[in-house]
Length: 366
Ligand SMILES: *Cc1c(COP(=O)(O)O)cnc(C)c1O
Image 1 (tube, rainbow, N blue to C red):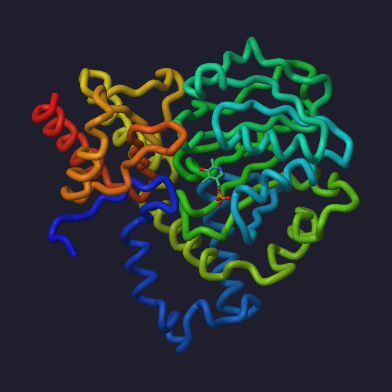
Image 2 (cartoon, rainbow, N blue to C red):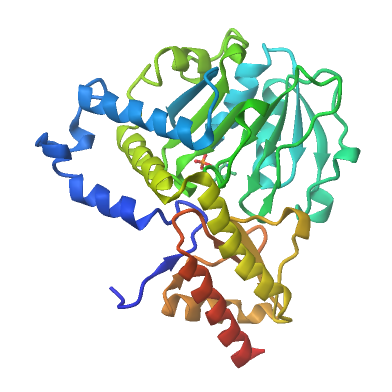
């Protein structure tokens, strides 16, 4: 143990709110006087169904989710949803359009191409995923079942600033979004989406849980041979309990939702994210030693990537940062350099401490 706090900039599994972690520790062995742990209880017990119902109420309140949406808590990761979106929304024959703005949407598009007609409506591969193509250049297919995009590309740090607008004539095309790495970090106009999903381990709870919001009338468009655990309609009909849900993750997600509400909701999370990331971008832009290649119009509030002018100093930077309690700053292997991931659980002091360290490092080696 170090005396100073450790700031964990891991992209995921990532730092969760300290208050939530402490609460879990406190009630782990004996949940609210029941004499057993939450992980030892039936998912059909009154205690657990109470937790589940409260978590749905809290999430609905946080994102102002309309009544005609189902809220699911599913086993598995966001990657499962890359198969489930085409399996459930294309009736086995439709075409789905994809905006490819980074590694995650690229992966999703590749999976969709195996399962249905798939059209890449736009890609920023040519700029190494450092921009979002101008909507004027998107090539939508004629009647896509949905338009898929990744709201925040975790690897390069590219984020949509708002939900994409579909042109006239596309009223029947729904938006499908992977919000894994920016879920609950700002308000979302849920009614504009058909399907939203988020793996938990970036901003909510441990890995193994995916939260899904799906518009009710879309359930029933699955291809007939969809495996039952991939069938959103069946999962929704069973209240996410067709089989045993990941009870511990769900319980922790509920604690995180309550914590976000206490903090002032997603509006406050958005303000916090802008302060943390803004502090870092401003410093990077005003310093020759560091740079960030992402277009200013789509920089992520969650994942700030940056490179050192002299990459031979990367190892030293990471070692000294870790020595100062600033850990997990190494960039993704496909991009190199550094990446500071700062989700809801990252206090503002984490961003300040990182910037102070970066300034000091640049002064010594620049
Ligand atoms: C981490 C991440 C995923 C992958 O989630 P798994 O739980 O590993 O399936 C998918 N999409 C985005 C945007 C991510 O950040």
